Length: 258
Ligand code: DC
Image 1 (cartoon, protein in one colour):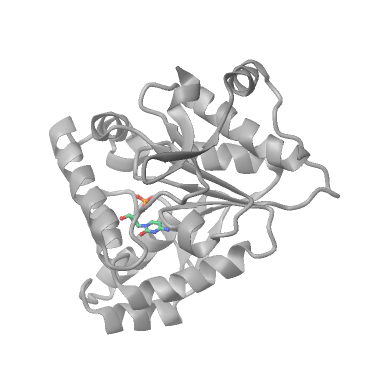
Image 2: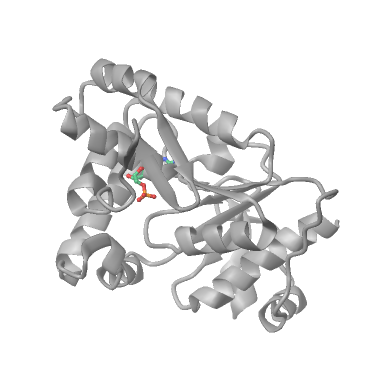
């Protein structure tokens, strides 16, 4: 069952497969990823829509490996937040790009700050969901953000999560994982995510907002959310998160030990 849920493919064609034995091993092993200082510092790309489990998987992988965890969604959220604070119209490409060009964004150890303001918590609202999706549609903004993300990850030793990490930011990433789940399951998870909605929003409202963002993220002209040809695809709809984490760890440890 699980093996069927893990596959890399391009336009429906399977290109990478994880054997059932490998998956069984991943699920039964407690210590899967190993990293010593003389090992190659990998770039690990984790992509997928919101609510697919990217945050938990990325932060756990990063902790286990002693890597940095870069949440690029939080970077777009910080820009959306700052644009709102400065009353910059979210569809004014030149104005938002000018803002991105002059602000300082820091992402480290699960926190995000912009121009010295720690915005880690305030960017997890439905209002900022929309603002982030709006600024992420702007080509000039993406250009600057992608350059920044490349600088942050180029030395390796990084787990970077987002929508376009394996396709645009690091097309040669050492490991690419695409996490997915049904829209209904992703909405269910979001409703229960106190850090995001504070549990205030109902399933229908959250599902509608996720559907709107999915549409915005996957139909924009530049770097839409798509599956890289060489990514491992994991459907997490009916997988407990610890199984998803272990499976991702196994894929990484195979690369490290190859
Ligand atoms: O992962 P998230 O929900 O925090 O992302 C916030 C928004 O930013 C979302 O609309 C997708 C967008 N995004 C993007 O376009 N590219 C990325 N690399 C990361 C996020």
